[in-house]
Image (cartoon, rainbow, N blue to C red):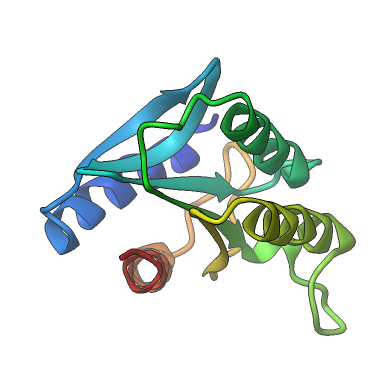
Length: 156
């Protein structure tokens, strides 16, 4: 994970903590052997947020989490909310989103259908993440606020 992604991850956890102090928010929360970018834990509820900046296969993150769910790693929670935050990297210039994002969202919806206590939400991180060594976009904190709002709206 690059410096920009790490900063976004840390800021996201802090902003979610401010918005939803009833949950305990942390970065790199483990679900089985899989580290999740940001997680909020409360009585009987677990909120998992994966940040997808430039990943070649974002569906893989969703699949790993859901395999852990099937294996019983999250049985202690009555409600599991999975939010996958996609950067503008997955947006197509012609409109719409890439098949990589569509595939990840498809897998998330399948899991939501398969497990009564799981909800899946594809949310926006509407900024193009910089490549290493390139200036960070000026509007990244505004984009993060959009993501925070979407995650908060998705949680019980």
